[in-house]
Image (cartoon, rainbow, N blue to C red):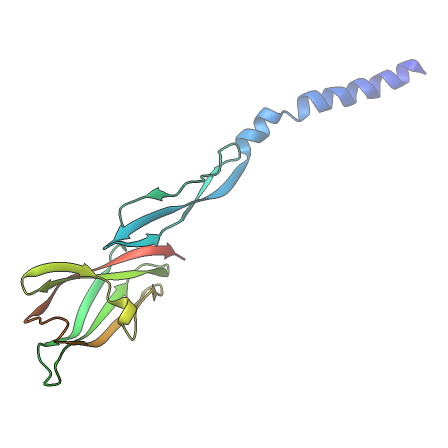
Length: 176
């Protein structure tokens, strides 16, 4: 009777010791982590979190990392309308524009358009989206969005003679 019990016990012990090696399962174990990142443009902070597959023993990142602003790849734009009126006759200046922003990629993006402007010979960069009627914070895959802006500024606040568009870029905050 003792011999009959020895074989199953030995067999079960061998299976447990050699069949379930913890070293192999650790190497095959993968998890997805979120890496918090951020960037600044004109003093404004934007978050840009990325996900990455790593081995299970990789620690979770805790501190966000500052990065250069990520630009939308293959982005293009077309100026449909751009008008600056230095004096409307109502003690205001007026800036109006419609700019078609195109995302040719096969994934939707969230982000912020950044316009480089020449204002009386001084180049500045701004998104203009906060005061735009269509801010284009998101652009669908293989699609476009028309950034639409129409604002007046009192001549008592600032007097500008010329406003010229130099360049448009799209900084990504999230790929979908």
